[in-house]
Length: 289
Ligand SMILES: C[S@@+](CC[C@H](N)C(=O)[O-])C[C@H]1O[C@@H](n2cnc3c(N)ncnc32)[C@H](O)[C@@H]1O
Image (cartoon, rainbow, N blue to C red; front, side, top):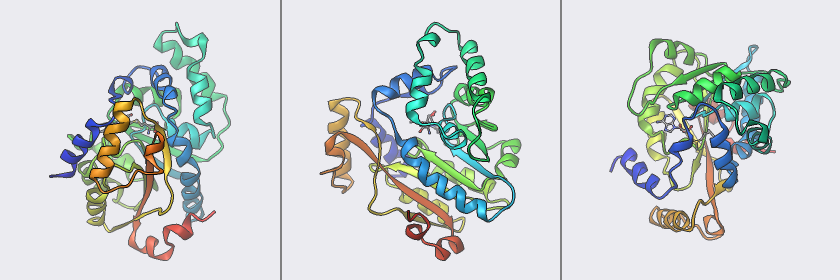
């Protein structure tokens, strides 16, 4: 079975959230995910910050981040403006916004973001298949560049290929599973044109990373998993989802005892880097506290 078929089957066990991914503004996204205590961008933030610090030491210009499955610019908000998911949940469930038209929400958010201090001098490009979410993230100022494309089925345009040549770090949270090795196969020629970015993916434990790892290896990348650490993604949406995910994990040879059994979806962190970088400093040393 190919990885994308396997991922399709695994996705069956997860609650379907597609209806909140492509609205004109992020209210529904944050309202729904707040109910599930979706928190993986918060958990990922300190790891991404450490990677940015390492990369910044090697170059003069600001680090360029490409965030895959960027949605409404969530990781950009956390990394660039030092916001937390808690603050984003509060902001987008503000009662004064309940009756607002989407264009008023965008104007409100532009104002909100313009008044925040940039904590991290980074340039963020977001890529997501959800056109409206990417448009919002661009208009509100969270993203510097936005690419609305589904690399599972389409190739990159020439303009997108040019933009991606600058990437120093590729990030993703909550996205692998929707994106398979097919997307990475289409992405890698663009991001390895000149520089070879580090690629950090937070991946739910039920999605095997092997096929993506093999694809990245064809481009000279070595993938390491951060062993001994899991990261909470969110609570289960229902008892059914919980039961089905536990079955998926056991079928995949993963023991969910003292993990997902407790009621939360857990992710692991995979870092893929050009071989020389991985050999020079293994992940445990790179990310030691
Ligand atoms: C669970 S959300 C995660 C969003 C964000 N990274 C976060 O952690 O808040 C999954 C995102 O993946 C996007 N997505 C789904 N399939 C995709 C694909 N084939 N290519 C790019 N993005 C995709 C969705 O539109 C959605 O924005």
